[in-house]
Length: 370
Image (tube, rainbow, N blue to C red; front, top):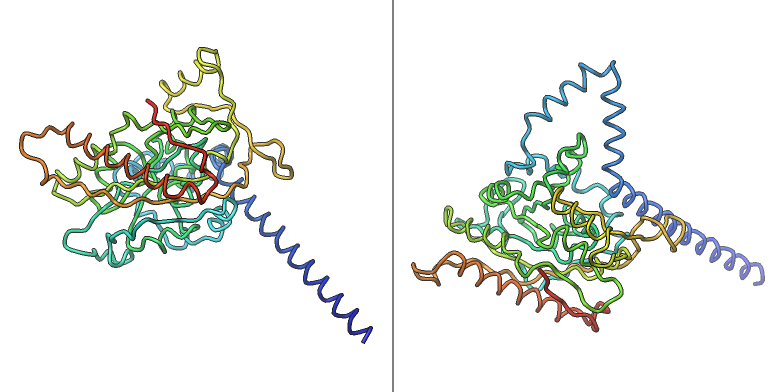
C-alpha cells in the first residue's frame, strides 16, 4: 500500500509538472504572437533592406515585387478580400495573439448575415446588409481590434456570413512587405474612396472613429473614458452615402472594448508643454502621433513595451440601420447625419452602461470630447 501511495504521489507530481510546463509553453507562444505583430513594421523594414540589397535576387524577386508594389492598388480600391485566404485567417498564431489578451466577444443581438456562404459569395438575400463597425476606445494602438481581423477570437463564429475589413491609415501600406502582412490580415485603407468601394462590394468595415487624437486622450488613472466622437461624423456620412448610392442597406454597429485602455499605462504631458505640442504637430501633419506610454517586459511585469496581460472584452451593440424613408425631401444631409450620429452615441452608451458592471468599470463613465 505504501508503494502504491508513493507511485500515485509521483504520478500526481508529474501531471502537475506537465500542466505547469504546458502553461508556460502556451504563454511563450502568446508572447511570440504579440511581439511579432507589434514589431512587424520593424521586421518588414529589415527584411526589405536585406532583400533589395541582395544583387542575386534583383531580377528574380526585387524587380517583380517592386512592379507589383507600384501597380497594385488593393489597399485603397475595395479589393482587399482577394488577399483573404482561409489558411491565413485560421493560423494558430492568431489564436495565441487573442489568448494573450483573453479577447472575447459579447453581442447584444445576432447580426443579419451579408452572405449565405462567404466562400461561394452567395448573398444572404436579394437586398443584403453591410455594416460599419465603430471600435471604441482607440487606446494606444487599438491592439484588441486586430483580433477581429482574423479568426483568433471567433468573429466568424459569432457573426457568420459577414466579410469585414479592419481599416487603418493609408501610410501603413507604403512600407514594402508590411503592406502584404496587413492585406493578408484583411486590413485596408481608411480612405473615403476605399470604404465606399468595400461597402459596394458587400464587405463590411471596422474603423476607430477616435483615431490618433484619442490615443492622446487616454487617462489611465482617472474614472473618465475620453472618446473623441463628439464631432466625428465622417463614418455616419459614409453610411448615408452608401444608402443613397444604389439604395444599399447599411447599418452602424458600435463596439466598446473593455480593457483596451488598460493594455498600456500612459504619461500625459501638460497642456502647452513642448512634448504635448510635438504630439499634436505629429498628429496634424503626419496623421499619427506618439503617446508616451509603457507596459510590461517579456520576463517581467514592471516595465517594457509589451502590453499588459489584461482581459479584453469586445461588446457589440445593436445595429442601427440607415433608413432614409423616414425623412422628407426637405431634410438636409446634415440633419440626417446628426440624427444617426445621435442614435449611434445612444447605443454606444447603452452597450457601455449595460456591461460596465461585469468588467470592473462600475466607477467609470464615458466623456465625449472634441
